[in-house]
Image 1 (cartoon, rainbow, N blue to C red):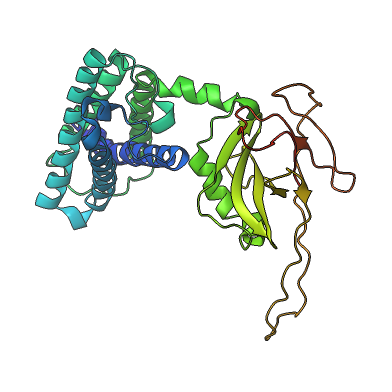
Image 2: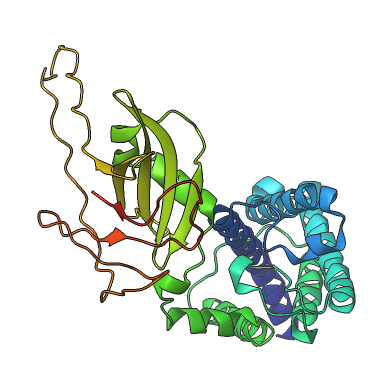
Amino acid sequence: MLSIVVAEAREVQIPLLSAVLLAACAAKFARILRVGSLDAGLGPTALFPMGLRRPVALTICIAELCCGIGLLVTAGPLGRGDPADTVRIATAVLFLVATCALIELRTSHPETGCGCFGDFSTSPVGGRTVARSALLAAAALATMGLPPLHPPHRGAEAGRLLGILAAELVVLAALSPELGEGLVRLGYSEPCELRRLPAVRTLTALRRSSQWRRRAGLITADVPVDMWRELCWRFVVFPARAADREAEVVFAVFLRPHRPAIHAALVDVVTGEVLAWPELPARRAGPGWSTEAKPAKPDRAPDCGPDLVGSGALAAQTDPGLGIPAYRDPPTPRPDKDLALYKVL
């Protein structure tokens, strides 16, 4: 009976290891998309010089992805023999190297998180994190020489497999500081005023928006000439030309990760006066196209809370037709331009 339980425990390790590796890779990739940096949030990269951190981070992500997929592919008859053993040895080596790196990281950079699961692994490396990596390395070594897996039969065999899997998940949860961080995040909603959103994410969302497509014909440069943040909004200024006047297009982008509200205004460079948008050119006639340009529909502005008056604060003035706030006194005004009031249309 004991030998049967041991054999079933070895079989459970393959799907479990694959799930851990793929989850770690997905969490790192999500962190990369959010921050816009390949080596951001990956703790072991702090052990390398700056020039090597990007390739090391890329190697870690690729290794986790390949080992996670390889364990699943070689679990059945397709991976019988050497292919399966090769993937399992590679997985064990990956966790052994990770264990050694975590020990060194704990000694040389005690304040740095392991980065194992992206944003959830920000706590400093501790004994539990090292023990978890060592346990997963031992689990990978235990799968060496394992015959191809087969679907469990109903009844006692399936019950034993589920019990073994549940017990190991409890052990891993006890060794994972990320569990507490995840539970905290589930019950906490960060105020938009404190939300950290990189400027590159704001620019990416702006260039994908309908507001950008409507105003791109007036913009004369690819990069903004000014950018600042006020509470829940980030303002981006691009040089523009309206008729014969030098102007600027000011975009207000709400700080939200997905589909943010975006508004725009056209401002005269010399006087600071808010200009009317020039008429859109008529579209070229063709099948299914109208020869008349349709006016752009403004986006609805979210509720920005109560009015705040004062230097550096949100000055809430409202357009009677649209109910959209205007902003004054940016935190970092340009000395040669009057940025006291940008009316977002």
